[in-house]
Amino acid sequence: TCTLLDGIIEEFGEKCEITFARGCSGVGGETSREISHAVRVASESDLVIIQLGDNLRYVGEGCSTATLELQGGQKELFDAVAATGVPAVVVFTGSKPLILTKMDIEANAILCTFNSGMEGGRAAAQILSGKRCPEGRLTVSFPCHAGQLPVFYNQTAGAHHSSYPDLPGKGFFGLYPFGFGLSYSKFRYYGPSLEKTEFHAGESVSLRIKVRNIGEYETAETVQLYMRDRVSSVTWPRKNLIDFRKIRLVPGETAEVLFTVPYEKFSIVNSSCERVVEPGVFDLLVGSSSADRDLKTVSLTYVD
Image (cartoon, rainbow, N blue to C red; front, side, top):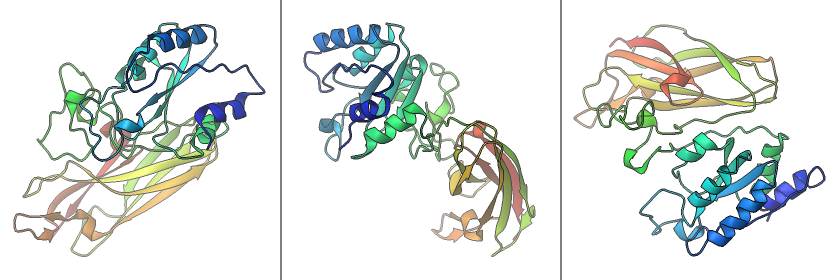
């Protein structure tokens, strides 16, 4: 097993001095002495890597918690370390989306590792050092606040507020939406284009889009394709993920991604419990996450 500390020592041990402090237990109890020690260590450092997240007591079936906040003194630990003014990177290790809103504002970076297994510490350290580029994308949405729940990208139209007056600009996507993930590189999308703007029963639809790596790292981008039925006879999600491609690009390289959407992907279940494709306009949305700001849209019409 390689813990995060093991990985950091392996990756950085010959390049800099590494000091470790426990910080807090993560399960409650007396933590002030541990936090005070961690603050002293942090204040004497050039950079802090602080690991936060779930404790095994709060993980798994039958372990529901009454809050999604970090527990066991972890919030207090982060606040105290952040107050030192030393640059801080948070490594979030957990089993579910917790409330990281304050960390999103005050931390210099957040690396989400979830429960990464026996080699997780080595993998995280290699990402922190820049040896490897982060390529993961979220399969869940992170809320800004527990009161914002439920937060998921494919909510039905009218089922949830599109914004909150006390969470301006966050909407129902939450802090980090489904499909979101940062990279050390940057990508630009060109297009998309459709082979046709009308389709009939049984016909598939092809969509093409070009993606260019405009950054300085060779890495992968996950190109995501969503579908929206503009008007349906029953309540249906605002959008659904219907396909994705993971492509690897070197700096300056451009790739064309082809999606072929089967006819059945445009179907819904009507009030008679029949799966049908209803005549009308559909949107295909393609981009780097489920958030509308990250998607490019083209429209086509099903003609019965």
